[in-house]
Length: 614
Image (cartoon, rainbow, N blue to C red; front, side, top):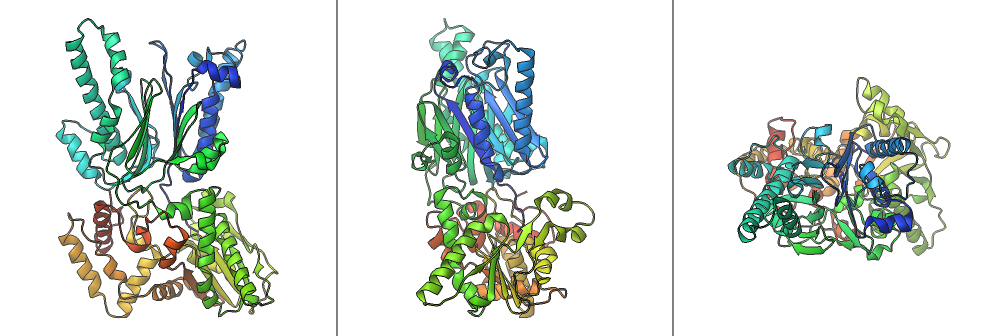
């Protein structure tokens, strides 16, 4: 019910045939561009604040621009604006050269985005100001193509300050303390070193080579995989990073815990990489089982001559792929994600039955927002199966009770009068519910802060005068911050944490907060333990849920409210191959995770409303 940030999406495309092939077969040198636009459009759910596309042309003469980039920071959705801007450039070129048909290789020089390599991104820089400067792809330009670097990614580093210091110790003067700049400059530093080492070696061993020939030799032999190994050696965090090097190389690398998702496909025509498997399958019309996962710690490099190299730049660790990606961000047209979300809906049925006292026939089931529709289907199927097993002649009453008016979102989400206007975002269907007799069950994919529930949704549902309102989260209670790419880093914003603090106060256990604060201070530079777990230890999941319901109840409500969360024990049952559950369990896969959660508590205790990793 509340928007989460940093849901970045990444895409890379590298054509594997000469451009004449695409002109002859598809009638255009823009085949790669159009595939790239489609691939990123199918991931635009991950980016609502910024988007960008960069491309590299190969084998163009000096004086012809070989690098093109288009970035947009809002309006929402920004990817649509990127597409419009590029389409406008293409139409302008066609007006300037009306006699040149589309199936003509001259467009390779005339149109900036007629290229062989593409790098696309939705969202914006994962750490820093929300501005056009933070939008990916980011560029480190140089007159030597082998030193020109373009990067984008779905990532956040938890040790960016340490990595920043290392750049300073190298003699650099980074323009910003951000993980985006730090990553770009660190990779760029090792590219510079590799280029210089090759230049010195070839200059000594083959003195007859001209500088032009030397540049070509360096482009053919640049040890990009070694560059990535040296660059990523000490990164702590979750990442899927992609890059282009000016002379025509492409690469991608994934964190050793497999936190952030990444997939790739290789055909005779193209190498393509994306954050989502289904996006690749749909864009290129291939079977989904032909798409491979980028392994944890793995890098894929496509050399200038098309050679594909794979290797591990970091030793793979226990895989802790993010489960919240599956619950919230990834599109459900991936069959595995679809079934996982349905299973989440089925598994929460026993908790729902307890909340409605088993009164299925006097309950209407619904969902909000649209992203919860798959869990809703699973919930209904679970109820139907239960009724059939018990040989009961009961119809599951599932209805579309509430609707979200998305056209009002931008206006209401900011500015004066938000609280007065926010109730207008939702519309309800009247006449379906028996007033005072029917329970109303509404399932959502997750509950983070509870703000929308308290300010808007519960009040609106209450106007239907149900016997009770049961809000169901298909995800467990979100108790701990994320530090790997999703912007949920402030403990005090989580309604589950607020509930635990209230319970501590009610039971005269406030001393635990003081003790946790002291532990966090003493271990500020250590990473062995998440001390914030102590805040929740005195309470069961049910006690936290009851307290949340109590906190969200306001005098305007005309009926009781219950909050039902997915039991944490069900998560590995529903999503067995993605065990990254630190949001819910507090079990962070990297040392930096514990450091961030402890810092988040320090910020909360000291009333500092800032990110725990900034």
